[in-house]
Amino acid sequence: MDSDDLEADAGLDGQSTMDPDLEQAGGVRVGNTMATKEATETVGDAAAAAAMDSDLGLDDGVWAADDVHTAGAATVGVGSTVAAARPSFHDILAEQCAGDEWGVPEQEMEPEVEVHDGEISYVSGKYGLAVKLSESFKERLEKRWDYTVVVKLLGRIVGYHTLCGRLQTLWKPSRPMKVVDLEEDFFLVRLNCEEDYYRALTGGPWIILGHALSVQPWDSTFRPSNGRVSQAVIWARFADFPPCWYNTEVLRASGNLVGGSMRVDANTKEAIGGKYARVAVEVNLTKPLRGIVEFDDMDFKVSYEGLPSVCYGCGSMGAQFGFMSISEEV
Image (tube, rainbow, N blue to C red; front, side, top):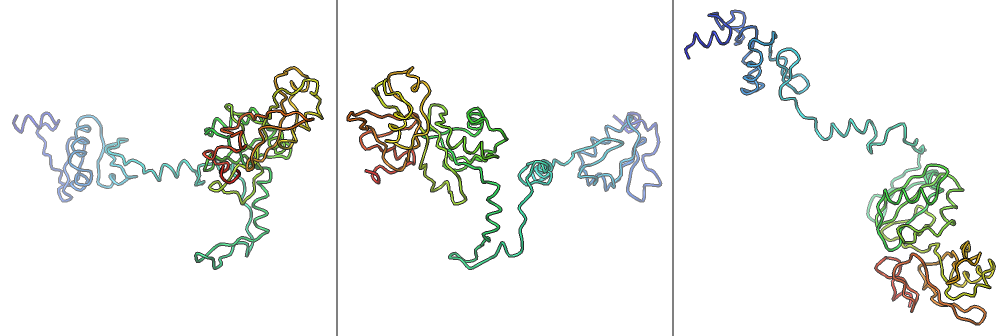
């Protein structure tokens, strides 16, 4: 194909490709499109060629070097963009967070506790420089966590969303609660009123996925890494208990032999089930659990619902669950 054919295809009809006004700037006009050498070099040969091809006989416009540095993209013609720069992960995260480094909408965030002069100080510690908080400041920080409990499912790992759903169903809190996922399969549950708090602590036993849920009061000294499940409200079963003794006070007395009696199972109280008496008791999991009790000169075997690997010879729970070391308690 000769030069005349090229000019005809380009729509030049024999016109010169050099514009006298642009010759000094090193530019070239093709049809109604003007390109400068600087713009071509900035965008790159491939982008420039694609832009010029799209402009030939299609759009009227000017492609100037000043256009290529707009918002990190090369602007070609009118309303066209070539090779727009991808936003960085930092830019995306900053936009999503909208001012909050954890991504929580600002309108949902609690106002921070005000810090007064001298309430945060730097002191010399055993590892060098250390931070010290004033007692009054710590009290104000912890005040918001007054109705918080530590929970752990005994003998089974449970997911965050599963636990949240089950607690909502079991506890039916009157106000919204917050659940915080901790290490070692512990969770903090922050309740918002005294009624919900005491129901969580004393309204059990709470059984999730067939396992007992330990619920303990929280304080700021709790550390999941060395935390131990020290207590739980569970169901104790007294096998072969005479149905004629299914009296509330009698059953409470039997429960007190293995822990602190909390309440009597309704079916037991009404003598609907006669295989065993069932009493909710608060037990100390750091001490051996009793597998047999004496009641009015008779022996009754005791079992516990929802607890993993209880050794009824010594009453200890399995060390693999992190509750106690058998050797420490025997």
